[in-house]
Amino acid sequence: MRGRYLWRRGRMLLLAVAACLVIQAEFPPSVWDGIYTEAQAQRGQAAYARYCASCHGAKLEGTIDAPTLVGSDFTDDWDLTALGDIADEMQISMPANRPGVLSEDTNAAILAYILKANRFPAGSKELPAGADPLRGVVFATRRFGQPESPTSVAVLPQSVRGLR
Ligand code: HEC
Image (cartoon, rainbow, N blue to C red; front, side, top):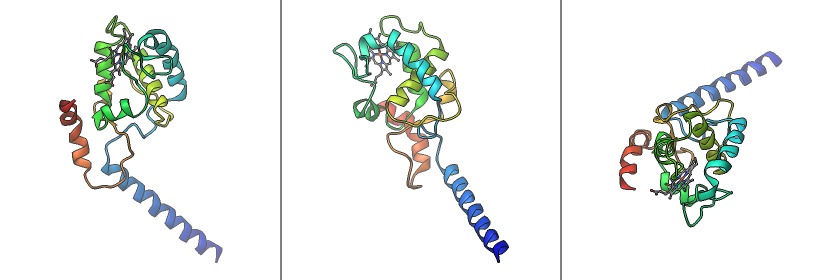
């Protein structure tokens, strides 16, 4: 009796895992997938305070000199773009008074901190340095829920970016 029950439970679990795999395969990786670590975000916070806060505010709230990096004013702006685009913007144009002085590693940590501040979940792997590994990662204000248009989501980053 018990063996049969366990077998049924085991089968249910297998089905659930298979369903998850199928669902995951339909969506590109995104900022919801736990793509940075807590420790990395903490390093990023320190670097942010040093290199970015003077313009973007101690709490990323923005100042008269620079836009906010937290909340919907920021996230809506980048919704459905490639995370690599934000990494590029940081690497190429920030800090605006000394563009490009920070290493890709430091910028990855700062980006991790920005993700954390915007309540995207941390995970067990660090955000990779440089924009290239982030070109296929989607910045999205909402988790992908409906499998209606995974391809358009994957293609959108460039086209949406062009509208900004
Ligand atoms: C000297 C002031 C200054 C400093 C320091 C500075 N920024 Fe900026 N930042 C700006 C301004 C001004 C803009 C808006 C530029 C634009 O829209 O073209 C901006 C825009 C941005 C954007 C794009 C925001 C959006 O909504 O599109 C990001 C991301 C960003 N900064 C990150 C950083 C990071 C990370 C640092 C620290 C490494 C930093 N900035 C340091 C002035 C600054």
